[in-house]
Structure formats: structure tokens, C-alpha cells
Image (cartoon, rainbow, N blue to C red):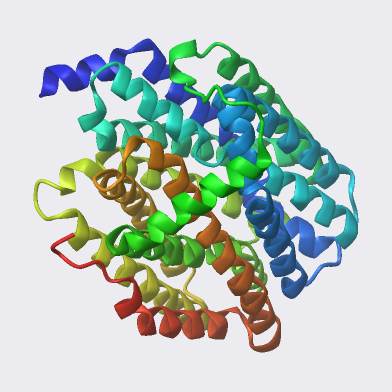
Length: 416
């Protein structure tokens, strides 16, 4: 067992898969994006609407991107997605109002839609080519850990960059560099990982086929339930994860002893956010890399259910710590949220793989992504409105209780 795992780790293409995730997550603006939007006059409701615009774009273009992927291959689809991301970064870096950021979010959503499932599909194809498919949890967890390592390093570099450049908008422009590296890295992938259909480009047949696949999926109640459970979890996480930025901004403004070493309160905030995100992603990387070890102790369904409860409970604890102005408690449970998400994601990929036929993979992952987007479209503006109206900590308490109310709806039965 250990020998084959070492062979997988040393494989050249597996290393490329890991490098892809590493460079993809070098988004130097990530610890500061909500602060950036707030500083440019937007409120939390408008920011929530921007996230909804992104997810609406993902939903609209998810299926067409699948059609293009089937016709032209996952490699070309991924190359196009990075072009969309780069355009998005340019709009973010040069824009100054809600309209410009809306355009940026549309291109970001296009990037997400064209990327969704494409890289995972190539990993699956490669594992089957090498007869390593049964090690998919190990491989996915490992490649995901490199993605999170990239996020952690990105957060540290963002501190240095923000002090060197001073303006957050330039972080978007600098983030173009690693995306260009990924563009050329994908070009180097071998042909046998890029499985594609040979049919002509036919929208009618594609949508008919997609409709039939989705209907078939809905008839598989176990698969549908697992997909829905994952989508609810991911939507809650995606909608709340970046609230650490306005939370720390409000909290640090009220704590005078943080002004030291001639740093202003704004500089302390940026340092704190960069370090916080770095810690979050380091622990997330460790969690993802070691997720498969938990399966030696309990079943996948046990861990997936426990992690959902832990996530929703974290919302309430973070809210309490905000009210108490306990800085370290807030950081600890934001870190915990990322750990829960990066443990649960490999479990979902593994569990759903047990029920999928090879030709269903892209459809199932696409439906899960679209369902997640649908929930984010609903949740993000509501959270923004509640945060603007009642405060972030009260919004988190409300979301925590809603999460608990949905437990029966997302709990996966142990006999799955």
C-alpha cells in the first residue's frame, strides 16, 4: 500500500496536477477583496449581490461549457477559463463602482463555469489510465492540499505586496502572473488525459442528452441526496467564509493595543488578515492531505454528517466571539470552518464516485456545482442584508440556526 502511494506521489503528471492547483490559488487579493469593495463604497448587500451575479453566470454557462468541453476537450476548456479569469482580474483592478465589479464577477463566473469539473475529469481519466482509480481519495486530497498550500503562500505574499504597492487593486493585476503560468502548464498535459467525444457540435443533441442525464440522476435518489447534501454545505461555506474581513476590520478598530511598532490600524488589519488566511489555508491543506486516514476509523457518511453539524455550530460560536470581541476565538473557528470544508470535500468526491458510471461523472459534478450556485444566489444577498441591518454576529446566529434546521434534509444515511 505504502509503495504504491509513494509511486503515485512521485509520478510526473500527478505533480503537474498538484502544481496546477498551487498556481490557481495564488490569488493575492483574496484576503482583502471584501475590504476592497467596502472601501470603494459598496455595502454588504451589494457585495452579496455581486456573489449572486457570479453564481448566476456559473449556472447559465455550466451546460454550454460542458458541450464545448465534450467537443474540444477539457484542456482547451481550461485554457479558455484562465483567459476569462485574467479579464476578470483586469476589471477588478481597474474598476471603481458596482457596475465594473459586476462585469468582473461575470467573467469570474465564466471562468468558474469553464473550469468546473474539467480538471477533476482529467485526474479521473489519468488515474484510470494508470489503474490507480481506487486511490482517488488520496490523489484528490493530495492535489487539493497543494491548492491550499498555494493559498497559504499567497496570503503571506499578499502582506508583503500590500506594503510594497500600498493599493489593493494592484493585487488583482499581479495575480495574472500565476494564471499565465497555469495556462502554459495545462498546455503541457498529455493527450490521453483529455478524453473528448467525437460528435459534431450540436446544441440540440447536447441539451437533450444533458436533460436525459439529469433526469436519470434525479431518479437515483441516493446520488441526488448526496449531491444536495454537498451543495448545501458548500453554499453555506462559500457565502460566509470571507466575512472574516469585515469582522476583523470592526474588531481591530475597537482594540487600541494593536497599534504598535508604528503601524497604523489599517496596516495592522492587513497584516492580521494576511496571517489569518495563511493559517487558515495551512490547516486546510493538512486536513485535505490527511482526510483519507479518517476513513480507517469511521465511515464516509459518519464524517460527512459530523462535519456538517460542526460547520453550522461554528457559525454560532463565531457570533458569540464577535459579541465578546475575542479576536483569537474568531480566528480559531474560521480556521476550523476551512478544516471542515477541506475534510468533507474529498469525502464527497470519493462517495459519489461509488455511485457514478464513467459517463455520468461530469453531469453529477456539474449538477452539484449548479445546485451550490443556486443556494449561494439565495443565501449571499440575504446574508448581506441581515449583516447590514442587524450586524454580522446576529446574521451568523440566524444562519447557524437555519443550518441546524436543515440537518434532516442533508444528513446522509449510514447505509449509503
